[in-house]
Image 1 (cartoon, helix red, strand yellow):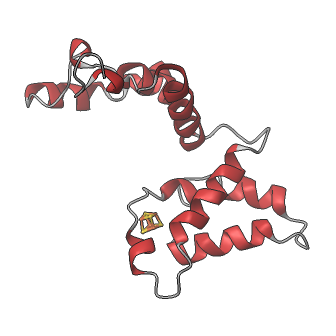
Image 2 (image 1 turned 60 degrees about the horizontal axis):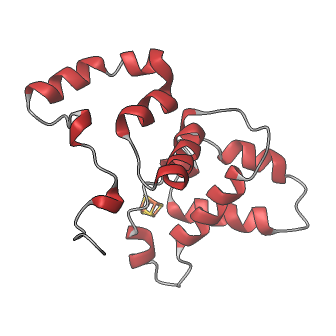
Length: 141
Ligand code: SF4
Protein backbone atom coordinates (compact mmCIF):
# COMPACT_ATOMS: atom_id res chain seq x y z
CA UNK A 1 0.00 0.00 0.00
CA UNK A 2 1.51 3.32 -1.03
CA UNK A 3 1.63 6.61 0.85
CA UNK A 4 -1.27 8.15 -1.07
CA UNK A 5 -3.66 5.35 -0.16
CA UNK A 6 -2.44 5.28 3.44
CA UNK A 7 -2.90 9.04 3.80
CA UNK A 8 -6.40 8.65 2.42
CA UNK A 9 -7.04 5.96 5.03
CA UNK A 10 -6.46 8.59 7.71
CA UNK A 11 -9.11 10.80 6.13
CA UNK A 12 -11.58 7.93 6.21
CA UNK A 13 -10.82 7.23 9.89
CA UNK A 14 -11.30 10.90 10.71
CA UNK A 15 -14.64 11.17 8.92
CA UNK A 16 -17.38 11.09 11.57
CA UNK A 17 -19.97 10.19 8.91
CA UNK A 18 -18.18 6.91 8.33
CA UNK A 19 -19.43 4.01 10.44
CA UNK A 20 -16.69 1.59 9.41
CA UNK A 21 -13.96 2.78 11.79
CA UNK A 22 -13.58 -0.49 13.71
CA UNK A 23 -13.43 -2.57 10.55
CA UNK A 24 -10.94 -0.15 8.99
CA UNK A 25 -8.62 -0.10 12.01
CA UNK A 26 -8.63 -3.89 11.98
CA UNK A 27 -7.85 -3.93 8.26
CA UNK A 28 -5.04 -1.36 8.58
CA UNK A 29 -3.38 -3.38 11.36
CA UNK A 30 -1.29 -5.31 8.88
CA UNK A 31 2.19 -5.19 7.42
CA UNK A 32 0.60 -4.65 3.98
CA UNK A 33 -0.99 -1.47 5.34
CA UNK A 34 0.39 0.94 7.93
CA UNK A 35 2.99 -1.40 9.46
CA UNK A 36 4.74 -1.68 6.10
CA UNK A 37 5.74 1.97 6.32
CA UNK A 38 9.33 2.22 7.49
CA UNK A 39 9.16 5.99 8.15
CA UNK A 40 11.79 6.86 5.58
CA UNK A 41 10.25 10.36 5.07
CA UNK A 42 10.52 10.10 1.29
CA UNK A 43 6.80 10.76 0.75
CA UNK A 44 6.86 13.85 2.96
CA UNK A 45 9.84 15.22 1.07
CA UNK A 46 8.37 14.79 -2.40
CA UNK A 47 4.65 15.42 -1.76
CA UNK A 48 3.72 18.28 -4.14
CA UNK A 49 0.57 19.36 -2.29
CA UNK A 50 1.69 19.39 1.34
CA UNK A 51 -0.32 16.37 2.47
CA UNK A 52 2.65 15.10 4.50
CA UNK A 53 1.62 11.46 4.05
CA UNK A 54 3.93 10.15 6.76
CA UNK A 55 2.24 12.38 9.33
CA UNK A 56 -1.16 11.02 8.26
CA UNK A 57 0.15 7.45 8.40
CA UNK A 58 1.47 8.07 11.91
CA UNK A 59 -2.02 9.15 12.93
CA UNK A 60 -3.45 5.92 11.54
CA UNK A 61 -0.82 3.92 13.42
CA UNK A 62 -1.75 5.72 16.64
CA UNK A 63 -5.44 5.01 16.02
CA UNK A 64 -4.63 1.33 15.47
CA UNK A 65 -2.49 1.19 18.63
CA UNK A 66 -5.29 2.78 20.66
CA UNK A 67 -7.86 0.24 19.46
CA UNK A 68 -8.58 -2.46 22.07
CA UNK A 69 -9.08 -6.12 21.20
CA UNK A 70 -7.37 -6.11 17.82
CA UNK A 71 -5.89 -9.43 16.72
CA UNK A 72 -2.30 -9.58 17.98
CA UNK A 73 -0.20 -9.39 14.81
CA UNK A 74 3.60 -9.49 14.83
CA UNK A 75 3.64 -5.91 13.55
CA UNK A 76 1.40 -4.71 16.36
CA UNK A 77 3.41 -6.61 18.98
CA UNK A 78 6.60 -5.10 17.47
CA UNK A 79 5.32 -1.56 17.92
CA UNK A 80 3.85 -2.12 21.38
CA UNK A 81 7.02 -3.83 22.60
CA UNK A 82 9.15 -1.00 21.24
CA UNK A 83 7.06 1.63 23.02
CA UNK A 84 6.98 -0.37 26.29
CA UNK A 85 10.76 -0.95 26.33
CA UNK A 86 11.64 2.66 25.61
CA UNK A 87 9.13 3.86 28.21
CA UNK A 88 10.49 1.45 30.84
CA UNK A 89 14.25 1.58 30.23
CA UNK A 90 14.90 4.38 27.74
CA UNK A 91 16.38 1.98 25.24
CA UNK A 92 15.75 -1.25 23.35
CA UNK A 93 17.51 -4.39 24.50
CA UNK A 94 17.61 -6.19 21.15
CA UNK A 95 18.07 -9.62 22.73
CA UNK A 96 14.84 -9.31 24.76
CA UNK A 97 13.10 -7.39 22.01
CA UNK A 98 13.23 -10.24 19.48
CA UNK A 99 12.03 -12.77 22.03
CA UNK A 100 9.09 -10.57 23.02
CA UNK A 101 8.05 -9.81 19.45
CA UNK A 102 8.36 -13.19 17.76
CA UNK A 103 8.31 -15.45 20.85
CA UNK A 104 10.86 -18.17 21.54
CA UNK A 105 9.63 -20.32 18.67
CA UNK A 106 10.02 -17.45 16.21
CA UNK A 107 13.29 -16.49 17.86
CA UNK A 108 14.67 -19.97 17.15
CA UNK A 109 13.89 -19.44 13.46
CA UNK A 110 16.36 -16.52 13.60
CA UNK A 111 19.24 -18.73 14.78
CA UNK A 112 20.60 -19.41 11.25
CA UNK A 113 20.63 -15.68 10.54
CA UNK A 114 22.28 -15.03 13.93
CA UNK A 115 25.00 -17.60 13.22
CA UNK A 116 25.64 -16.04 9.83
CA UNK A 117 25.91 -12.59 11.44
CA UNK A 118 28.21 -13.97 14.14
CA UNK A 119 30.46 -15.56 11.52
CA UNK A 120 30.71 -12.21 9.74
CA UNK A 121 31.22 -10.34 13.03
CA UNK A 122 28.00 -8.38 12.62
CA UNK A 123 26.19 -9.67 15.69
CA UNK A 124 26.56 -7.43 18.72
CA UNK A 125 27.05 -9.50 21.84
CA UNK A 126 24.93 -8.85 24.96
CA UNK A 127 27.76 -7.12 26.86
CA UNK A 128 28.14 -4.69 23.94
CA UNK A 129 24.65 -3.27 24.52
CA UNK A 130 24.51 -0.08 26.52
CA UNK A 131 21.50 2.09 27.26
CA UNK A 132 21.40 4.98 24.81
CA UNK A 133 21.28 7.36 27.76
CA UNK A 134 24.83 6.35 28.70
CA UNK A 135 26.31 6.60 25.18
CA UNK A 136 28.24 9.60 24.07
CA UNK A 137 27.82 11.56 27.29
CA UNK A 138 30.50 12.79 29.50
CA UNK A 139 30.09 12.28 33.27
CA UNK A 140 27.94 14.92 34.85
CA UNK A 141 25.85 15.68 31.73
S1 SF4 B 1 7.56 7.27 4.97
FE1 SF4 B 1 8.61 6.05 3.39
S2 SF4 B 1 7.86 3.95 3.74
FE2 SF4 B 1 6.43 5.31 4.80
S3 SF4 B 1 4.82 5.68 3.28
FE3 SF4 B 1 6.31 7.37 3.09
S4 SF4 B 1 7.67 6.69 1.44
FE4 SF4 B 1 6.55 4.86 2.15
